Image (spheres, rainbow, N blue to C red):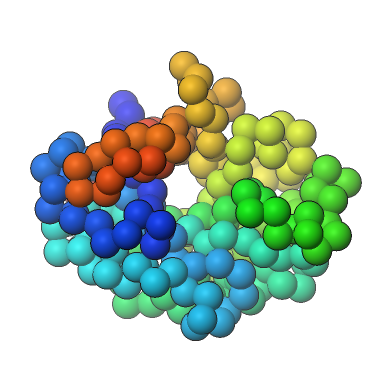
Length: 203
């Protein structure tokens, strides 16, 4: 069975979660922030979004947008999201966002297509540190990243969240499929990321 959800960040503005729930959204993945453990890099809406999901009993997970350019930075990124998760009811895991949508890695000289092993190392470091703190840890990336950059065989112990838009299926086995970035959800606005969750949601 697939459950319908959204993932959100500050770019969605102030989400009206009452309307979102009424619109039939069953779960959410909330951006915690980006990069290493620096308060200035927390997502401006993360705390509010977590509190609202808890108030309305909407199961949610967190994701951290990675800016890691070398292995040593992955630990600080794990610490970043773990700081924000502490004391919160994060029931759908913590996810490591490996895309380079804003071109940060490229601008800083990292050729992702040549550094798949290093990026896979970062995923392992991040996810293992998150798991040590008692959370489920998973990896978000585009289908291209999963097929052509990351070494999937090394990461199969972690669930995948794959972005594959405009398709009839996710393209690989995954826990979450982000099937569009252009959804419309009452309370979250236009151009909302939409997802299906495969598995059982917590009661």
